[in-house]
Amino acid sequence: MIDGLIGIQIIGVLFGLLMVYVSVLHNKRKEFTSKESVFWICVWSLFVLVAIFPNSIDFLGQDLLGMSRTMDFLIILGFIMLAGLLFYVYGLMRTFQRKLEMLVRKIAHDRVKR
Image 1 (cartoon, helix red, strand yellow):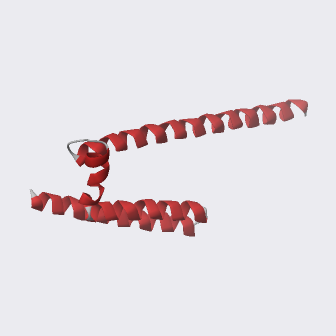
Image 2: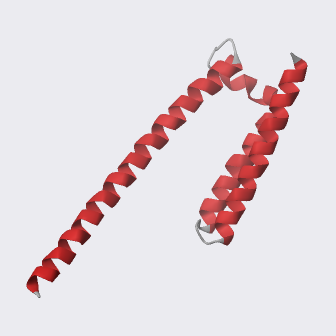
């Protein structure tokens, strides 16, 4: 059991460090603003810390919320975050879709005038 936990911790740390690196690359390519980069680097650094010290969040799931296992808390939190991100991305997609539709209409209207 401990060997599996250590293995998953190593995978978590490597994944977190990879994502920190990817966030820095996005910042260097000017795809993220400085604030966005700082946010994502903090998120992934926190991810690495939780992977190294998984017992540090036991108080959230077990003590504060009364869940019997911290993993249940993490799974529920993950689903909540995925649902929120999905809703946010859907909203962005609809906004871009409306803007694209307006642009296409404007271009078509300008071509008809000529």
